[in-house]
Image 1: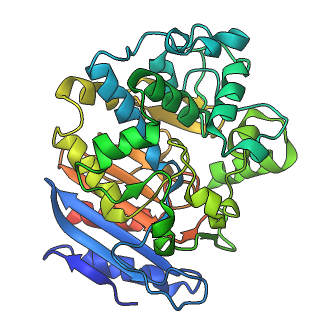
Image 2: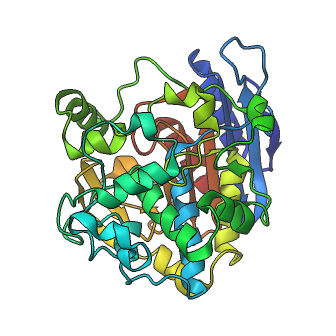
Amino acid sequence: MEAKGKCASGFEAVQEAFEAIFDDPQERGAGVCVQVGGETVVDLWAGVADLEGDQPWNHDTLVNTYCCIKPFTAIAALMLVEEGKLELDQTVAHYWPEFSQGGKERITLRQVLCHTSGIPALRLPSRTPIMYDWDAMAEVVAAEPLWWEPGTSVGYGATTYGWILGELVRRADGRDPCTFIHERICEPNDLEVHMGVDAEHFHRIAFFERAEGRTGDNYAQDLRAVMVSEPEHVATLAFTNPAMGSRQTADPRWWAYRHPGVNAHGTAHGLAGFYSALLGGRLVGPELLAEFTREHSNDMDRTLLRPMRYGLGCMMEQPADPGASHRMGPKAFGHVGLGGPISFADPEREVSFGFVTTTMGSHVLMDPRVQKLAPLVYAAL
């Protein structure tokens, strides 16, 4: 399938590989963007946005990107740290007293950011019926007991991360966290990334659907086996309570959902542009950027069930798991969204990368489509 958009000289192999993705009949629509030193060298899109094949994918088509939003939220918190409104090593309960319930009084902002807080999931009952009610969910999170002592284990907070950081942003700044991110990060840098899409833009959203027959790597298969057989395992609950599967993404309530940890809709150029703004010093200063990209935790993750290495809100290269590599060098950092979307940066080469898709795969971290595209970008630099 022929892609539309821009591809600078020297990056033709990236375009060829992107177009080859559509040789699989399950692939419907996708976009990829690469920026170098803040300049766009690849910005391609192809396919369709709907199930019927009638709505072409456009440059401004929005698609579900799941947890790619987490670094935006982490940077929002770090902006408030830079302004003296939050402190990395202050307890969450200092700003949010109700959060001290269940033994959580010692959890710090830093521990939440690097997934060592000990509160990566919510126990049953199911919170899916109230997931769209921010205040109700904040009360649930505040009351949830620890799973383990803060700082002793790594456990990816798929949904709890967004509620904890979002509530801290709200209490420190006064604005809704998604409004803060829009006004302080996205709008000033012209980033097409939405945390809660306005109804007037619903028509731009592509239909996101799971592909059949894609099994994922061994770690993803192990995680899926636990989720099927152990309904009260911390890993199962991290991803299912409340629900966040592909079925939810077709619901207009999900499109409008304001959760700054697990839900955003964006474009490839919006995701790549975030990292260009970050590397360009337009979001936080060099000291906090260094903290953001410095290793803060590195261990077997008890919710992802694989070795993970985190900065302060970003996923970092993990030598123990080459299959999850960004394929762009040892200092690359970024974040995936479940099933394919991803955005990341290589600070050594000033590269920012964004990929979005309507076709959800089964890899929890690096999707095979991106694993083919990223090395070609690297080779073209």
